[in-house]
Length: 483
Image (tube, rainbow, N blue to C red; front, side, top):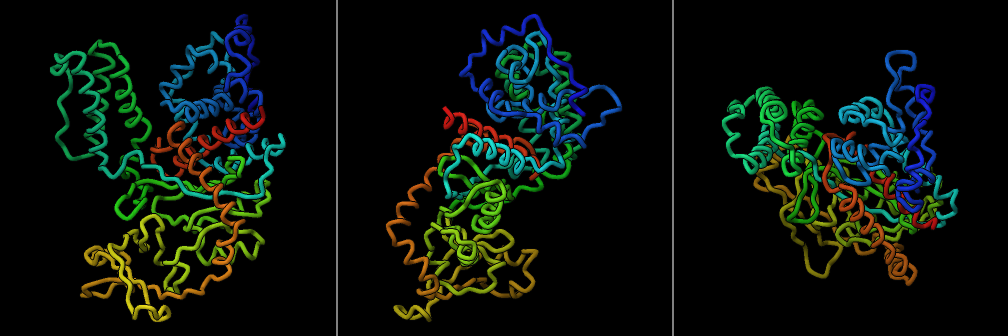
């Protein structure tokens, strides 16, 4: 067992925790609420128990990551704070006088020990079990929505990323002492990534070993970020700025490059399921899996509350078959239409436009047919034909030489009569008012737990970030409801 590698904390200063970490301290409350021994069980196969030196306690490593999610700090800064903050040391199971680990150990733990774990489902499931045990999970409705997270590296070439971060460090250095310019290595002028990485390593070495300048906060933060980029994510940089990230659309004229996290949450504001996808994925397509995940985690789902993105035909059929109410308004552009190639064109409800499977959004829309004759009218969306000419999926979609590319949906006003009647009911209107709760939860994730920007590259890194952030917000919510 991994536990056998650990030693019991004995210290003459252990009583300090009772003096300086009060009972209402968030970290003390989490420690008392959660039995973290499940970490040992989950990581058992990722450790060699009869070979090499003793590993750092996996619970301590996991809790370092949790602290990062709660306080939105870098690995370097979270370790530094744990050096002097006794509430951190208490939470990490350390004695007050214990030395801290090297921040690089945290990176290795994240990459080597957690890489094959389904951490997102695991941690959400643990919090839901706690909520059920405490008797605070009573809702039979889940609220669904998606929140976007910008890629850490955005749409930049790897060299540009490194150059940008090195530039910030130089600017901070010159503000302290402009004479250091002559002591710094010459900037890289090559277009080869390997040479840019070599320059950054030399630049870092010079600052740490030759300049003798104090690393004040204005210099420390950009310097740590440059180091972390070179040391932690260099393998991602060699492949791409972020090979997994994709362009998604928030509206007709606003886009982002990154990921989406599709969430389900109870009316008590406890997240029950999450799916992390690339940025271009359609919200409505994730609904069925969110329902299934919520049920598997122990939630009795009788109603689903969402926006227009979730009221597509497949979801109406699925929820009706499973005796679940779908409190989501119909979008006339979808629900009154009879359309072909549904798997190749998806409707973006924020922009009011269709998006093809290559991720290109229509540039304009027009209604065609005789006015008043709804069965003969169609809505037509037009795409940028220049993009179509270069598209890797153009075969069978774009006809060579065509001057335009469009997608049409015929209008049929009686397509979803049952849902139309349901959404006019007082019950539907009252239930739909609960949807705002998930929007405030999205804001909490972004503004208090750093979920607006990815902290690493790749879909797996985004899933781990989501797992820790959601675990943190769920624990905080459970503590509040349990007061």
